[in-house]
Length: 218
Image (cartoon, one colour):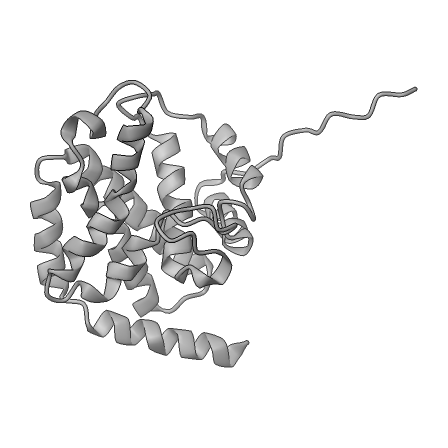
């Protein structure tokens, strides 16, 4: 286990060495300039990613990388039509298909930015599901990059608990119950436990599962 963690740390350190932070930051501001909501969401996700990475016991370089991928995870949304991105009602099947393309679009954009290519694969897979029912490649389990699995949790939590153009924020207890419900399905179960522990330690938020209906007596 320790050897595997050490190898992972070395791999992530090499990844971070390839990142040009200055160019990444300039690119991020350029992309989000006309969409302050997405920029705010990205900043929240970056902070949650750093907190989760800390909770997981990752080293400082890995925490920095987690924060960075949080900041750029939604850059592909620049390719989504504004009327789809800001629609106040339910998306049609066609519109949802367009929205789903943002993960691949983000990968394509990052591959064109010097010093950002190394995180492109992480961004491509941040909407994969642990059970293999996500997109774009239907990867499952630990086939999905670690930071992509982390992003799935942090992105969902912030998206659910902040105001969206199509709905009001979900109350935090309801959001945490949803994370628990999707543990092992949409989300990596071990990372889900780490994320909930992080929220409890940092913010005093405790997840409580939905009470199960008791069997009726005969």
